[in-house]
Image 1: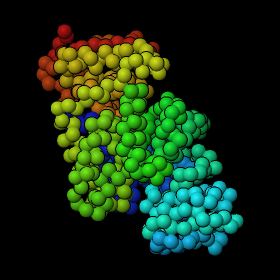
Image 2: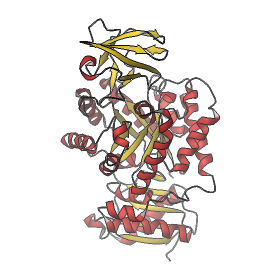
Image 3: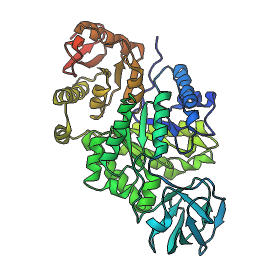
Image 4: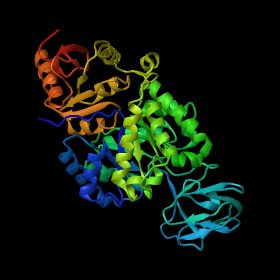
Length: 483
């Protein structure tokens, strides 16, 4: 008997770091409610990837459910060079920005200050907590004046909101991390600082060359990426998008982030593109043992907006209470999902979907499955899928009941673990005969505690089964018999 599914629609990802790299901690995080784990390539040596993936696989075996591993590529991220000396800065301090190995107070990595900055350009460090303004250029240096107090430390992120970086969308380190991630068996890749749809397309070409079909998450953190038409094009190119609020706030402004988050989530939902919210969800739990009320409201509002997943970063990577952070997030999500108005305005817009859908028959069946399940009070929707496509189509219509996605592919099951309302499980390939498909759906739903005696299932698959067609069939089935 398989363990019963603890149904929670919005998924939770935990970032792996010094606080969460022990096997027992990763397993405890999964048991606390984590559906996937993030490897931050900016802070993780490539040779550690395989070990971290194996820790997640051990947690997967212990929890008996698929868990996703997300490899977060740094992209064209500007940073304080690793050779920098940590120092405190006070307002009015003059600081030289320059290349590594020079006499610069802040050696930088990824750009040439004297060539790429101008007078009055803003230079923001650590998500904008330290603000500098360029006062003069003295090649190879830029002279910057501190506007606020703060700390400079090696590998600290830099944002240039007034300038466009010259770095390519995939740096040499990203390509190396991509190779290491594919070799380690990573399930999903995220690309930072996406500026245009072509950045996503380039990553997909690199993945294909490595023999991988892993889904791609486009991280939205550049001002140019969240404006039309770039946003619409990125939504059309990526498998999922992430509202990466730290750098987005630095690249735009903190007061714009809530509005941009609402806009991005709404547009993603209208197009049926999964969306993840990240950065400072429960930041106080890095040190404290209770979240602030504002943080609890932030998590709940992401649920109300229709996010598919929430990403915990520092809370689980370096926090004092990584397991508590996941438990707290799960409790807030569960409370929000219990709200009586949940999902009232969440359904993807049929008109928009028809414009962007490349499989109109499968989309029509997915939409009909959700309507039928709601009308008859079905206990679950069961999707047989080899690529994950059917489950994604159903999930974007936000049914109230679980979506049990049955697939013979472990990679597909793990990637589906990030999607709203989807409970992926490994199962044999769909039988070649329709009644056997329905019988297998009933057995799996019962085994996972989703189907009570006499309960109804909505089952979708493609027919004829042996030819692996796209989904084109819907069946309403009663446990223990037929309708």
